[in-house]
Image 1: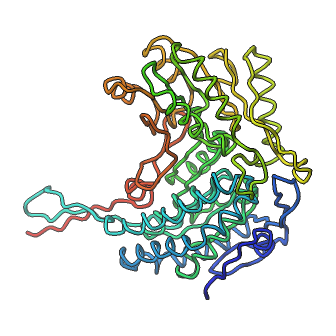
Image 2 (image 1 turned 90 degrees about the vertical axis):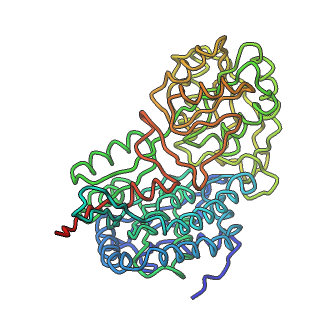
Image 3 (image 1 turned 120 degrees about the vertical axis):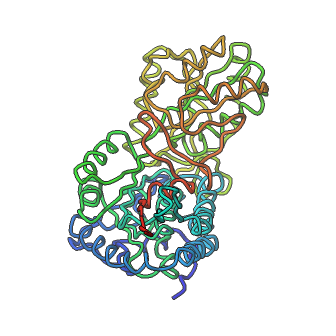
Amino acid sequence: MPVEMELDPFVLAKSLSGVHLIDGEFVAPINGKTFDVLNPATNKSIGHAAEGDADDVERAVAVAKAAQKDWAQRPARERGKLVAECGRILNQHVDELGKLIALESGKALRTESRVEASVLADMFVFFGGLASELKGETIPFNPNMMTLTTREPVGVVGAIIPWNVPLLLMAIKVAPALVAGNSVVVKSAEDTPFTVLRVCQIMQQILPKGVLNILSGFGPGCGGPLVAHKDVKKVSFTGSVETGRIVYRAAAEKLIPVTLELGGKSPMIVMGDADIEKAVAGAIGGMRFTRQGQSCTASSRILVHEDLHDDFVARLKDKVNSLKMGNPLDEATDIGTIINAKQRAKVCNYIEIGSSEGAQKHELSALPDDPELADGQFVRPVIFTDVKHDARIAREEIFGPVACVFKFKTFDEAIELANDSDFGLAATVWTTDLKTALVATKRLEAGFVQVNQNLVVQPNLSYGGVKLSGLGREASLESMLEHFTHKKTIILNME
């Protein structure tokens, strides 16, 4: 049956409370437990999510395993058409999904949440169109033998997604896995369970039952059993380095493949010949200030040539000061909230650490004056200057609206400082000199490097990191082939 549009996110959150989606139906958790989901702008409950455990995982994986056999037997292009149709229907729900993710995540509707909902739909359409690329090769091994390879699905995929961009990061896992012939069990983030549940509900209009299932719950109780389940043959995880290591160890026990996207401390190099206006705008977007800096690719280390440094900092402060912080559902709001009280306390602690380490703090924008938002998880953006390169705020991922601006003299110095990090997810360089740009892209130790722009993840752009930023690539044809299929070699003796 068609899913009716519901543009009131509060009503929608209540209607999605207390259930998982398994075998095409809403079902209550076997243990009967639920937990509060809070609106971070007010710190008030908007609903109750089902608290999944190992029994729910067992039920969801069994359903997914049974459904995957028939799904894999469908022609690849038919699977692709169905997944693309999911994208087209999701596109009709962009405003609804944008409002719901703004409510439960605290991200501003206009600048962040509606955009994410749109990219979600686009990602399903994109991967749906790649179904014909699930093809093998012929190999000139021996003239008397027909030797070829085929691509086959891995089986049941476990997808564990974070709270910062749950729609996009669900899409880059679910869409390629489904097109490749796998079934999927998603474990949502406990802070943002409702929007991804709604997405799966909408997709049930198109997909066969059991092919896509979603559970909510906490990492140890629900995510852990999903990774460890004997019938889960692939895990795709986005989250912290600490949890990524736990996932990796559990997957290693079963010798199954994993994709891990684990965060970053991304550098932005502004050369002395850069267009300063474009670079400042790039810093606003790259630091994801409108997302409160809650991004793995956030350009939280900004390296500026000494000739531009003071002017750059002054312009950057002016731009951030002009951003309005307020109710995420208000179209006039540029900046929303931190996700929850724990994360807010962590960010505020880092800000105190930065000051205690001797850096100069520039606190910007203004907290909302609406009494209804007095208990919300709002944090003013902070830019630190005069930062030591070995300072904690310069080396550790804060995952908040905190940027460090450094001064450098030479290109080699900038590259050395940019690479002096345990992370290697993203990097940007801003220059008008082609040679500088090309050399920088070659020398920067990151998986996602851009020149004179700072785009977020997009369909068809291979995305992933090196070092502690993770393993594998997402959002591209490569990710579908390498991470959601295995290659089978077939030899026919013709003698």
